Length: 115
Image (cartoon, rainbow, N blue to C red; front, side, top):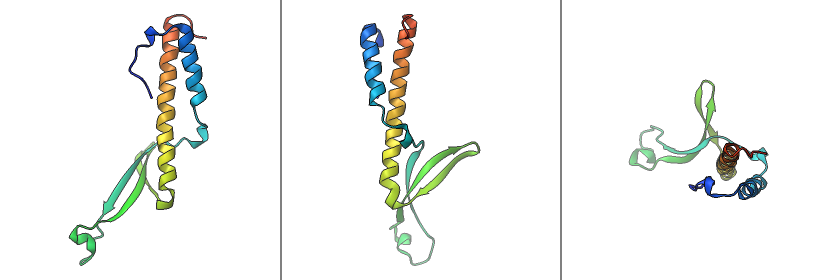
């Protein structure tokens, strides 16, 4: 996770050590899955169904997927929901770690010590 600390307070050696530690902490990239999970409950519209009394059907889990043509909801079967949730969470962690590594590299670059 990106920390709200000033990287200017660290020595160059500390920044390089931190960068190396962050790089080692990255999990395998094979598990990357971009998107966000959305949970929906629905009404079917059939007269007399329990959903007409407020007991909605579901929960149904969907993954929002970005496409060139916009966003799409992809249905996730209940048996896969936990695994997909782990992969989406892992992807967010990877992105945060990469952002922190990038911030460290930017600080090293401003010092003229990027290597």
